[in-house]
Structure formats: structure tokens, C-alpha cells
Image (cartoon, rainbow, N blue to C red; front, top):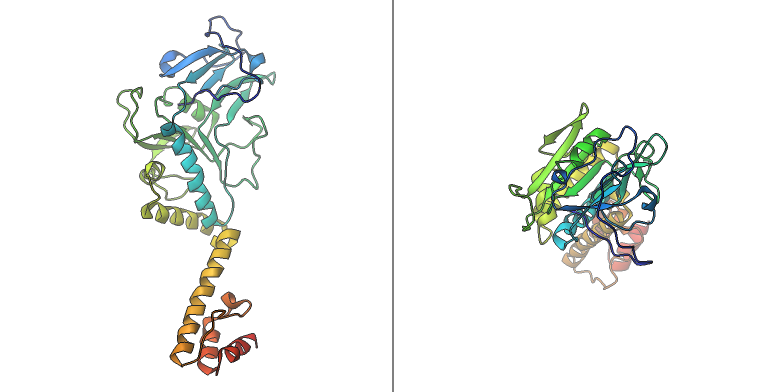
Length: 326
């Protein structure tokens, strides 16, 4: 699923294969095995080299000091996560308050000495309420220090996160994890993996599969999967995003007019609708209308009945404007 990131500064030294007998971390879970990370390569990564490492990996643990690195990223793997960012941005606009996505960041748990113990990298991490959450710092999301993301997305293009990463998310207490298997096929995809999106919700300390999201009320797994894989933005996806955004807004007392961009667009649409109504009324009465019509400040916020009354009583376009100004 994940892969190398090309360094833009000093080149990364060649990494040696992982070896047995690396220093262990007290009370750490057993070191992962190859069976838990199909399609990944174990690479030795000592703890003291973590800060300088520019690898993109699935998992790192202090028991074996090993990073599990997958094949280079492909558009088919990267597209769902990038697409999700755009989708939740549209939901946020409809809700009327921002949602933040942090992409493929480190999710890090320290040991009792404050040293890195376990690191995982998700494909996308979503915070529904960034204004009141303890957000990750510049290096990683720290377990027990930062708030957990409301939703984490894992893209299983060539891997299977159910074997190790999903149980780890459950143990950490992540509230909602989406596992997306893209429609685009892959020769290295584990056998038996069918495309689709699975939603895992944490209840009483354990994950259960759900047909719909809890964080994004009413957004079904089928709708999310379709939106992440469609070549063009569909009417069905648009309707789903609007429905979910409005549901979130009703929960919080916000709406599209609380978003600056949508508020401006909606005001423009109201102006055009009211102007068209007034223009038709004036033309029907034989009154000439100029290209600068209506030309009245705050026209979008005027009551429709006031516009109609002025259009029915005025003797000219100038008189129409004066009546509305009064």
C-alpha cells in the first residue's frame, strides 16, 4: 500500500535488510511477521535513525526496529486518498465549518520512557472538528497526547491491513477506520480480495463492520466506494455529499451560508433570480430595462414581495430603483 518517498535534500543511505536480534522495547507486542504484511519488505531501521528517515512505510516497531515497506506507490493507490480529501472538503462547505485532512502522517505511540514504540502510517486521517481538537504537531500524531482522527482511510491496493494494522487501530481505540480496495486491479493484490469499502466502527473496545459511517452520518460504504472510484463526479455523489453535509450541519446548527464561498455564490444566485423576476415584470409592462439592471445595492437580500411591488408600481427603471432604495 505505501512506498518510498523520494528525498529532496540529502540522499537517504542505502538500507540493509532487517536482521534478527534488534533491541526490544519493554511490554511491546510481538514483532510483526511477513504473513501480516503481504507485499511488503522488512527493512532494518534503528530507532536513532527515525528522525532522518524519509521512507514511507506501513509499520515500524521498536521490538525488531524494522520498517515494513511496500512497493512504489501507483496512481491507483494514491487516487482514493486524494479523492477523499476533495469529497470531505465539499461536505465541510455544505456543513458550514472546516474539516481537515492530514494525509499520510505518522501515528506514533511512545514507550514508558518516551521513546518511539510503534509507528503506523495511514493513507488519510480526517478530523471533523479541527477548531476544537488537539491536532497533530509537525512530526506525528502522538497517541495519548493528540486527539485521534475521526476517520482513518487505508487503501488496500496490494496489501491487507486486516492482518496487523486493523487490530492495532482497534487496540489504540481509533473510532472509525475505512478499508478501501479499489476497483482498479493489481497483479500483486492478495487473492480473494474483492473491490469495495468496509467501514469498521469501534464499539465496546472492538471493531464491528457497519454499512454506513458514524462520523459522516448516512454516508454508506457503497456510496463512499463509488465516489472514490468514479472517473467523473456524478450526480449521485453530489447528492450524497449534500445530504451528509446538511445532516452534519443540522447536528451543529450550521449550514451552507456559514461557508464564505457558498454564501457568496448563494447570494449571487439570489440576485440573479430576483433580477430575472423584476426584469420580466417590467418588460411585460413595456418599461425599458438597461444592461446595468437592477443596479440596487443589497438587491439579493430584499424581500421578493417588495421587488414585485416596486416592479408593479414604477414608471421607469429609475423609478423602480428609487422605490427599492426607499
